[in-house]
Length: 573
Image (cartoon, rainbow, N blue to C red):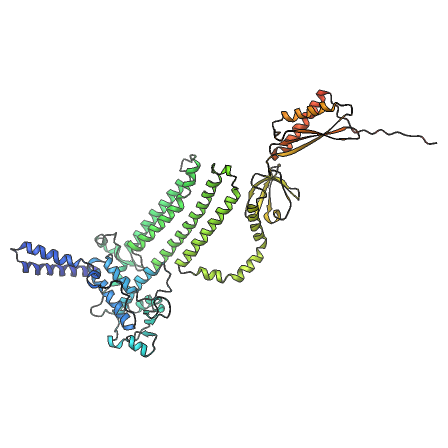
């Protein structure tokens, strides 16, 4: 209600000015009246800093408690006079308050909170000073007196409000309202808020600020609301609570709808792979945008203040951080899948596991960078955490040495590339199978029995590994067979080569061959040498070749003799 009264006084003042202009111009010279009116009110709209500030880049005079107090009071009074007619949404009023904030020591405040904390602290300090009996200007020490007495700080008499000289940093030598004053400013305000204002004080400047809307919300609309909408609860008006709740509902509904759309819609229809990939970005991006908009509207337009603003801001910053981390993780997965499945990169023999490792490492680097910047933004010392983690890091490394060995083993496998995904390998311990995945901790094999085996990377890097798929993917097959001594060896070789050439699993290059190995005890020993197209076909190819050899030999009359031994008994004398 105080705000309405001041606006009425401003309107009365403007009416008196118009009456004076009317009397000066006279009713017969209405043209003079209009020109004078436009001139006067046109000049009144020129920003105060354009009329007063001759050196806008000059540093503030904060060299003593006297000059600091005068500087702060001057700009807060100018801000108050401007807001009486233009409100706090006026850029000029906010500019003067921001200048007054320069008299505060906000070094302990997180960079993300300095604007809001500084703005409210300046208003609360103005409310306090307008209720206190301050000493005269001559009683407040200037720079000469401070240097003479070698004083580093000065406290307003009968208070705990202190101005102290900065001893380090870019503001060294300036006297600022110290950190303890900034931290306890609300406590001081609660103690004196029932005291009467002094003459010429900025009456209700803090209440006008906390209950007024931002520049996007017309002040007339808020003033037209019923009286109960202006009732304060936790230093926020009812209309502010209602507006924040409405924004929260709209934002939550938007995020939920986008999340459902990103999962393919309600009909569950299949979507192209590219569409599915890009849809996965929608939820984190929407959450980032919605949380950023909510923070701006609630802080700058609905104008939450105090502890409620602090809680709201921290919550939305946490949401922003989590949605940013979510976006990085989704981007890492999507980029990895696009690279691995790209038809342009497949012919270039780029190892998909190496691609996954690089993308995963880049994702973690971006996450650490995000945490680093967010911690600095919120005033948390991430560097100090690293510096104090030396001994804890050594203990952690000792406790997780096996995990670290597996991690570096995985990197060694991906960099050295003794095998890759899809290769058939045989370990010294006897495990044989196709490499399914080379992970950060283990390598997974799929055996021919469709059993998946996970082997720690530290074991694989310290054991003998036979890669049956390298350097060529084909695998050599040896089939040994014996024929009777009376067999035609040329015919046997011809039949064996025909059997190998007719099998589709046999690679045409190198060409199959037959070798006469030895004269056995019961048979002539031959060996069929050929190559399976893939190591996967080893068992099946051996089976088919053995079947074909048995049937062909039977049809061609080639005998496969049984092992036999003749025993001659010689009678002794």
